[in-house]
Structures are given as structure tokens and as C-alpha cells.
Image (cartoon, rainbow, N blue to C red; front, side, top):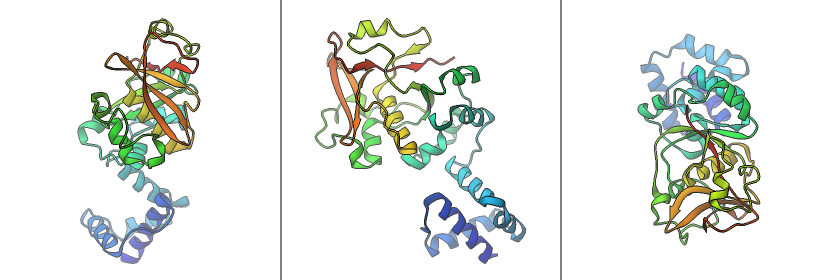
Length: 268
């Protein structure tokens, strides 16, 4: 039994991390938990014999999802969105979130129809946003992904410390078309009835999360206005080059050639 489970542990570690990282003590503890839950010789052999390490991968997937299997709506959404899907598993893996049962329940259903997702599958990201502030996100990822840290102007600002709630957000992967070189009011006139401007926290979460999951840098040479206001200035996000993501501010009445506006689909 222990030999088989050790092989399972190796398979899980190899698949999830690319190398063996579990200590002997952790392997023993993990084995005891499995045995207490009814894991026996026959079940262990099934995992070992599964083609392409499928069952071990499913075990890791279940743990990453907080013990809750993906709902049919989540599975279908992932199929539609492909690489433009950042779900619960990605949030656990890349941001280290520990979902509560309440959060998992609130994310069980996707608030966008399959038709909406299909229309947006190439232009938007479907993101499971967990309660993480901009400052909190910055503290969980590599230093190089943000251009400012201890000296950032926004460190003490409310918008950068707000965590929000767990919810699904369908955000546009670029500025609203033709929204550059326009004032805030002019940009608002470009939004469709089903669109709204998301908070900077949501955009930072989506941009950084998508990069960690896919390696794709969004908003490399543009900025986008977000919904947050600080002392009369609109918070902007963008210029995501090697120096890191920039969070800054700009007046609503001013225009800038590489400053557009962010967009997200409203819920049903």
C-alpha cells in the first residue's frame, strides 16, 4: 500500500510542480489522510494504472478547486473561453487563494450565457475574481510584475486596499475600440448598454492572472481608465512591459493618445 501511494505522490508532485517537492513527513501525513478516508489497495492501483496519469491529475485538480468539483457551467465556460479562462483552479495555483465554501458556492454558476461567452471568447477574459486587493496581489507575485512597490503612490489609498467579493467578471482584453484620445465622458458614450467600466482591482487581477497562466502580456503599450476616483483623478492601469504593470492616475477631462477605457460585461 505505501509503495503504491508513494508512486501516486510522485505522480502528483511531478505533474503539478515539475519535480518532487514533498518531504517524507508530508508524504506520511498525506498517506494517513488517504487511509482514514477509505483509500485502499484497489483504489491506489486504479490511480497507478490510469492512462496518462489521468486520475492523479484529477486528484490535484480537485484539491486546487478547494475540494469542489467544477460545475457543468464552469466546465462549459472553460471549453468556450479556452486560454481566456481564469478560474478557481488558476486562482489557487497562481494567487494562492484558499476558497471558502461560501466563495465556491457563489462561483458555482456562471452569470453569462453560452451565447455571450461565445461572442466574447476572443475579445474578453472570463475571470473568477477572489477578494484580493491590488496591494495584496502585488505581495503574492514576483517583484518584477509591478513597477512600483514600497514607494507606490497608491499604497495607502482605499481603492488599492479594497478586497471586494468573489464573483465572475468578463473583461475586455484591450481598451474599448476607438476610446483613445478621448475624455472620460466621451469614452462613456462608446460603451454599449451591456458594458460597464470595472474597478482597477479587477483589471489588475485579470492582467496579472492571465499573464501568470498563459505568459501573455495584455495592455503592453496602452493604458485604460478604470472606475476608481482618487481626489478627482481617475485611476488608470497599463503599460505592462518588462518593468512591470503601472497603476497611475489621470484627469477625466484630458485626452491621451494611448489612454483608452476598460470594459466589462454587466451581469444578467
